[in-house]
Length: 155
Image 1 (cartoon, rainbow, N blue to C red):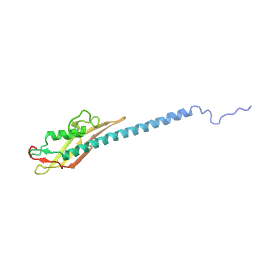
Image 2 (cartoon, helix red, strand yellow; image 1 turned 180 degrees about the horizontal axis):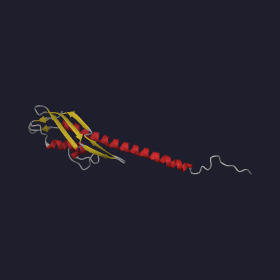
Image 3 (cartoon, rainbow, N blue to C red; image 1 turned 45 degrees about the vertical axis):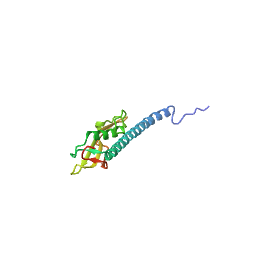
Image 4 (spheres, helix red, strand yellow; image 1 turned 180 degrees about the vertical axis):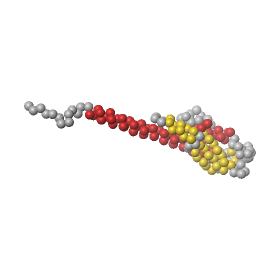
């Protein structure tokens, strides 16, 4: 009987080595995709929250006694709308980790202290991802024309 030899030697274990090499690369790709998707989801939630707050701020009633100073009740209601989704405070924020102190509300007045535009923005917010943290300053931000009711005296 003739003994046959393999040309390339033994191939036992090749599949295991290939699996080890490929799984490392695939895990990096899956982790990066998950990181990007979660960060994008959180940022999109922030954009929707700011949009809702700016919409509320542009349609609300402002009574500033004709001096251009925003009343605290207005600012608090807008901040609560961004964080909780309604003008009254709730226990669960729309975006985890977002607080009312992270929300900035600015109203630009004309020469007669009548509101013209409203800007709502997130001062600083950190998206805590799987691998990396992303810190955003003054993002997202939305400016809208004021269309609400203005009372130079208490309404």
